[in-house]
Image (cartoon, rainbow, N blue to C red; front, side, top):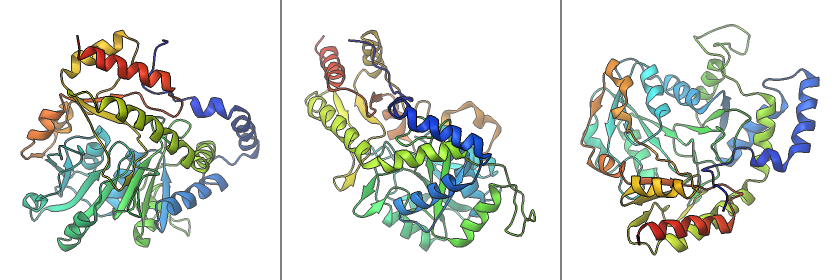
Length: 369
C-alpha cells in the first residue's frame, strides 16, 4: 500500500485541468482580477446555499471573523465567549479587536462549545459569543440564539468547516448574526490559495462589511471608515463556483467514506467516533475519533504510511501568544481531557475503499497487539 496522505489539495484541479486552465487564461487576458462576475456570482450562490440575505467575500475566513466582530461593534475590553477547542483564528480575531476572550468548555459528544448553562459566564461586559461548528457537522443553535437575543449578545457563527451541511432545514452558516465560512485548501470547497466569506441577514452589517473589505470606501467612493484590503481573486471565485456546482456529489462521496469508517471502527471498543446529531446532514470535513493511547496509535499508523492530524492541541487558552493579553478561563475539564484523545483520520473525496480498509485494519491491529 502506498502512503496515504491526510489530505490531497490538488484533486479538484487534476480532475478539471483543462477547464480551469482555459478560465485562467480568460481572466488574465480580461484584466478583471477582483470583484468581477465570478466573485459576484460566488456571493450570490453562497447566500442562497446558506439561506441568508447577504454575503461578502474576503481574503480569508480569519479576516471574515475579524470583520464580523468589528462590524457587530465589538470594542476593546468587551468580553467574547468562545470554546477553548478550536483553531487559532477564532481567538486571534477576538484579540485583534482588543476584546477579552472568555474560554468555555466543550460538549464531550460534539466537541463544540457547551451551551447548556452558558448564562453563568455572562457579565455586564459580555458582548458576543463565537460558536464554532466543527468537522462538517451542524449543531442546532436556535436555543443559543434566543439566549443571545434575550441578553443583547451578538452571535458570531464560525462556520469555517460547515459549508454544505444542514440540520432540520437549517443550513451551515445560517444561525449567526454574522456567520463566516472558509475556502482554505483544507476545506471541501476551496480557493486557489485561500479565501473566506461572511453571511448575514442584517443589511446594515452587510453595508459595513462591503466598506471594510475595500479600505472603508462607501458607494459614493469616499473613504468613510477605517477599512482593510481583503478580496478574493476572480480565479479563486471561479474555482469555488465550480466546486459549488458539484457540491452534492462531493458530499455524497464524503458520506460514503464516513459510513465505511463508521461500519468498521464502531466495533473497536477503544475508539469513539465523533458523530453528527441524528438530523444533521454532515459533509464530513473531518473524520474525528477519540482514541485510547492516541499518541502511540498515531505513531503506529505513521509507520504504516498513514498520515493523521491532531485537532486541536494545544487548546486555545494554552497558546503562548496569550501572555501579552487579558483573558478569562472557566472550568475546562472536558477539553483538557479530550485534547489527549482526539485524532483526525484521512478523508477526502478521492480516498479509495482499499485505503479506508487499510487504515481501519491497522487501527484494529494496533489494539490487538
